[in-house]
Length: 418
Ligand code: NAD
Image 1 (cartoon, rainbow, N blue to C red):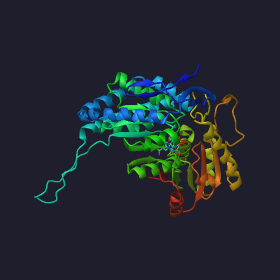
Image 2: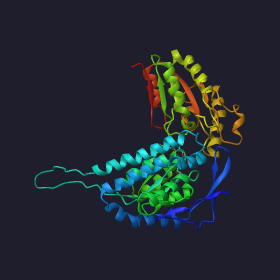
Image 3: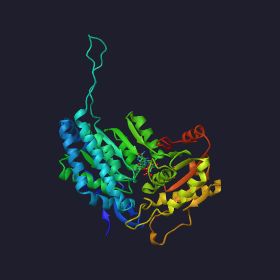
Image 4: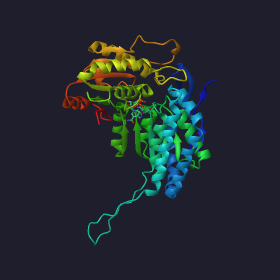
């Protein structure tokens, strides 16, 4: 029997009038685990109107009172981490250890912004004695949060914390692949933590229909999206037409640079962790490893040995879990052929490396390519999977030039003697 999810509007689950169901899959098995509506425009409208109706009373609460509610939500997440973790494991395919860590992170975000509730202030600007010039911070009103599947709850809370702390009300459109934990948080924040109905609403469905309708709704005054460059570009047009502010957190192709005076063992461990975390489905994954030529071969050897010890699969002690969506699973595998065609050398992993206990789960081995140059497709495209490209460099200037030669900009790391 599949779980059937509903939208969460004004403090209640409401059965959808949409006749279109979306299937939520369990990446660890490839089986369906839930159904969710692809909501209608009327349902987006109902969510936004509920948030709009709640904004007056929420924004007029004293900030310290909003902060208390955020602290309660954080405490609720911490003391109920396991049921939230179970949903995230099921819908994202994460390994056993990871969701509790991320739920702690989600609680941290809420606590951080709960603390900031008390220090919101404007500024006095001195433009002469005959004037009184000051700024007052005011909420936008209804904020739309569009979140991805790679870390659903922590990504939600990273946007929710500042939005609620500053007196906004929220409509969240979680990823259609992983809606469960966001719905649970919205319902339990209302039921157990004192969050008034309507302050946090959740509308389910696919991005180009439901997410876009949210961004285009005339009562939505600000939007934050974490997701792909494609989605960011698409909603930028809508937001620009409406002249509303947009916060985008998009992709990355982050370089880690290892110089020849670095601690090679530490750098190898760090490089493996940087690509293995969440099976590389992290915007700041260290997917390009730049290694000074004199230690290149030694480093590749160490990476190969370490990669062998990384346990991937459904077992409890696995470090790396499944790929979160079937489309992503197929997309990552398509890059193996591109790497071969470009002349990269497979060090470990790759298309033929499948383990018996993976069954129909969407698991991929930790894959390393050496002799990669920065013009190859695997060095340029964000693969968003457990695929590491190792690139050689000769001088610091060259390393910096390669690191910066990317269409993305997000994170970078450096291994150097201190
Ligand atoms: P995605 O863009 O397909 O989906 C992200 C969210 O946007 C989902 O809720 C989706 O339904 C919605 N969406 C998609 N198209 C939309 C549209 N046209 N209008 C409105 N909403 C739309 O991305 P994804 O594949 O789910 O996530 C992976 C991408 O997200 C990667 O590129 C990754 O780098 C990026 N990401 C970035 C960060 C960060 O903090 N910078 C964090 C996680 C993921």
